[in-house]
Length: 171
Image (cartoon, rainbow, N blue to C red; front, top):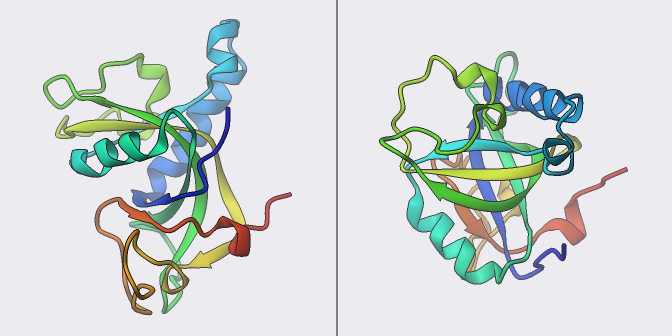
């Protein structure tokens, strides 16, 4: 599937859920269900339903690159926040009474004890930790004239100008 180059998403996700999300994807890839293997994905909850509705309007059925800020991370944090994970957004689903409406295999196991409070669940594929984190101060909100301030920490997902050509070094 094609990837849009008109915008991307910057989203905060608790680090424990990112690491656990890798486990969810690995379990899908190791399962006997071939449908799960080809559609290995992970779903994260959010209250920012407007952001994901707008993303779905703009993306026109294409995949969207996502930079992820690992919130609530353990250990030393850089003085200036960085996006240290990436994924590809494939869509979102409205919650059912705050719960994920899809199969539980698509949720990070670390979320099992969480209270169901999300308005939507946004689904991603190809979740991975970046070898070289992207400073958030080099990113620009979609339609904004300036980059984010050096200490800006995203509290909710936001749409950003497409930054990948210059910053992401994937191997």
